[in-house]
Image (cartoon, rainbow, N blue to C red; front, side, top):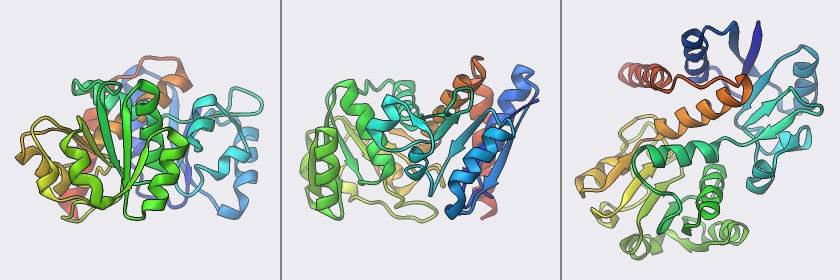
Length: 272
């Protein structure tokens, strides 16, 4: 039996096990997906132990995406982004990769949005913004980063090859842009948006990295203005699809994984 999993702290409420085990079942794979809540002070030992135990692959989540780069051999993509969210133990040392960028790209393409065309505004300057921004710049888009702390936006933009701004600049930036992305946690389990409803227009595609709830205030405001909207579950789905296919060499059952993911998210939200 092959064993994959998620390492982080905390991981108890992750939706990844259901996402991946649905894929194993549909494809008839003898595999399991486990969660490993790890002491931040013992990350090195945890990765070494996973390799010794014959674990085939791990996803990596908060707070280890950056720290784990010191323990694995990062791919070119992961090194450019500065974070690892997937480890492949078939190599020695294990290879660290980043499928967040691929997940964001496929989410956009699934909705008919060319990530390399036009101009994008990313709200936020954390890990999600870095992965999405790297993907967009690599695809050929012009990218503006806007953040509550402008200096962080400017620093990230300098790394990526974009421009950095304060949140006050979003209305003007969005007016002339094709894509607006929320890469902050604003809206997670709360009825708030990181930007004013007035920034949205019908020529925008709007994507949220938040997936609880599926329909955030950010997306509701975008939809009301006639924008194309893409919820955060699509990026979550496709980063999982990329990891599954990298680990197993098998084409992922995307429809089944999407259904399982959305059923889980909708159930959790209705119970909250």
